[in-house]
Image 1 (tube, rainbow, N blue to C red):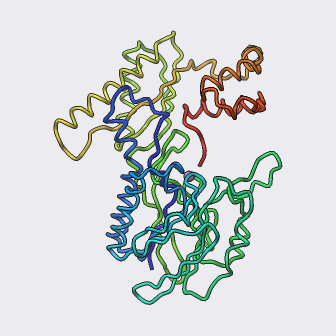
Image 2 (cartoon, helix red, strand yellow):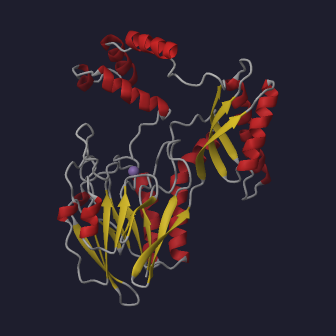
Image 3 (tube, rainbow, N blue to C red):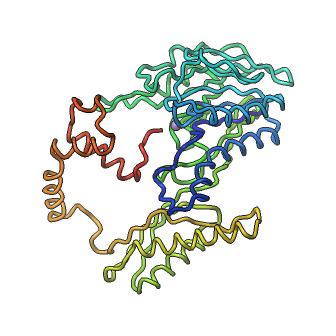
Length: 405
Ligand SMILES: [Mn+2]
């Protein structure tokens, strides 16, 4: 028995944190990459002749159900259906949905209900598989859903699908995503738990496997490294997951130390490092430590970006499938080797003072209005400066992309 476990496709993700430098081709390629990842998964499913595919929530990036996006999910699902490969999928916090409103799915494509239900599959070799799970109706589910899952059935295999975050048990953190405890999952005695929601792939447990598939295409800098899906195969009565990358763009952070040089030399050194390290398409967050005089990091960054776009243009002219584009430096920070931290007394005093000057109710209300427009629901909102500071801090760190798995 063999199946694919994927999650968090986030189809239609906007990649809005990436400066596109006016290059629409690049932006288009980025926006397309979540759909490309799904196509690769579907092609692998057919090539590997898997018995079924599980997609554990956040199929779409948003709950706005644009017809074009639905089509771009339904088409590949129909392709699997025609190949006789069943799919079980659910919605997560991002694409929460009242499932009674859309039942128009191809044969063998199972959309899980808002309450826990079990899909019974019979494989070509006669083996039986039960898959239990549910779809989000609202974007938050504060209660643990695991007690609603049925006991281990007498099917040959029983698999749980769960889009959720492990309970933190902390009183100052809200557990809004169907919080569960690992032991509860183990106690169900299922053969495999296919998890979604956390965008980094990895196993929470090995016997039985409790596995986060991660998202198949990283969307921002904190989703660095390889992204893909799990191909799960039965071996001696056990289900064994094997990770398969399918990402087109990979986010990485590169730290470089350069001891001396002019702007041109720094640029050359950075370029050399990039060339030697990367042979896919990498989105690189560069942190260059440089002890010398003040030099213009903006200029180096835009020079490197122009080189990237020139390569894209010549790739296009050559009309070859194999792109020579290796890296796109989306950010470059040059910092002096000696004073990198804000922990020093003077720095933190100055920072504290600046923070007090900026972080008052008047400024914040103005900021919120500028950003969101004067929406009525915001007028009487209770502005907690500390909370807003922390949120803003996160947003700045994620370069304008709102953060949520
Ligand atoms: Mn997600």
